[in-house]
Image 1 (cartoon, one colour):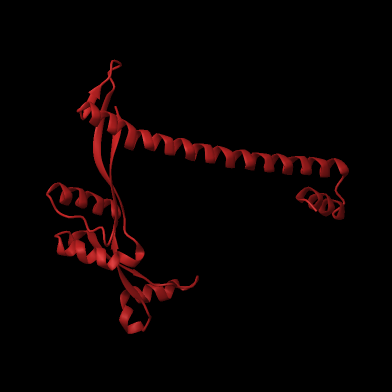
Image 2 (cartoon, one colour; image 1 turned 45 degrees about the vertical axis):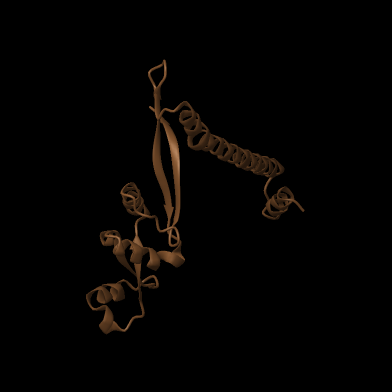
Length: 182
């Protein structure tokens, strides 16, 4: 039995008119078609973004390298430049190691301490009491280091420019070059 059959059966059980049932079935079919269209367009957009990434991060930087230039001004006045950048991700399992590495390498200010404590809805009063005196209340809690990857990215770029090694054993770091057309 299809969704349209289900709708028709449910509508008949509620004494809907044949015209109402037909309209509901048509709208449900239209929604399904639009859902398929959205899915296809999202896939198409994903493919276009990947093709654009390949041109911006691989093909165009390689062409500039081959020409022996780092920037070019086109006849329309737009300028193509290659910028060095990083993509940084710290896996949850390596957050403590990453925090330790940052601290050892002069970036302890990037390491924050977050406290996460689950409460049920309606326990606002307990939350307020806990913020005043956490340990005396006897709640179990975890303190985990928190590191904002945007700040780490900036620090790592500077660290790399100064000749420092990147901690690829504790962070996922992807150096890349991308062209920018201004």
